[in-house]
Length: 339
Ligand code: KG4
Image 1 (spheres, rainbow, N blue to C red):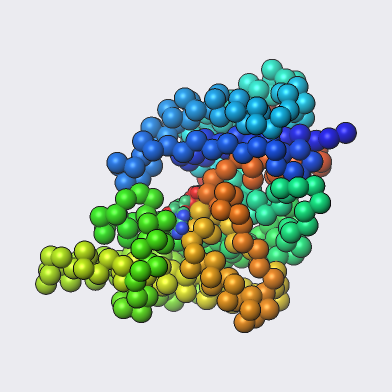
Image 2: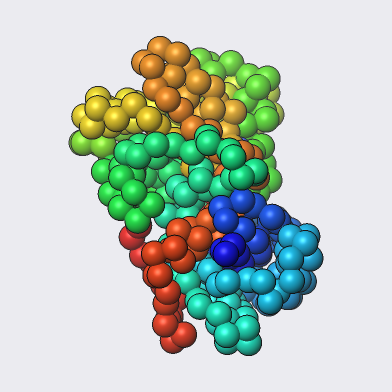
């Protein structure tokens, strides 16, 4: 008998619902929240209110687009954490209501684990593109920069992570000081294509082992702007493309240096990337270059699975369903939780 999972994601500012049947994606609906743009970042209170407005139409649409009836859903999986508490509670409460009304099991999903497992979503039944265990996954988003050793869908070990800011935060904060919009990552990515990546040199961190740090880079970027703006008030406007290209290439270098070290230490050459920053074109180019130069077998996610989405929640729920890993109806959300 088929296993059909309804996935629900509401950890930050995207309300998403997806249906996966036997590992194959049937639908994935995402409602992004434009309300945060004018604030230059996500406003938690506004995010949870928008989730409240979006959740019913988004789930209805996901079920409609799947071509299935809600009675055919075997279980509902929801993001339990990490994330913004008010946002998480909307998905959590909705999932519980849905599970109770349909008399089906409830499955809690770790958002970070789900980002990694996005690589296992199939577009068609015979697709065989998923990474083979064990593999390394660079998880880079607005809140996380981690290197994860993945031995099974439920056996993941963080072997390196940021000690301060995440890579996405470095993109977003630097874009903000340049007066660009939010989120800054995609804007920097676009502008970097027109710029010289060697024009400006920024500090790179010297952090032990496989850990990352991006706060020093942010400060280095800020100090350069401060010093140059004191000499020329139009400095940013005149140099915006080169600033974007130099910043982006520094972030990518920092990410890849530690990833190379992780491959060397573990001997694992199967390497994936996940999270919002995995949409970045320079990150993707660096992965392709590393596969050519060092023989890595690389896995780049589809663009629709890079940012937050419920398809990754549903695929995680699918594997947990097979193992009978259900959660209690009283399960609270967690704003912070390890993989
Ligand atoms: O995974 P995600 O949607 O949300 C979480 O943080 O959980 O990641 C969002 C982050 C933001 O920092 C955004 O600027 C970044 O991903 N991002 C990018 C690109 N697209 C999204 N950063 C660099 N280049 C991109 N093309």
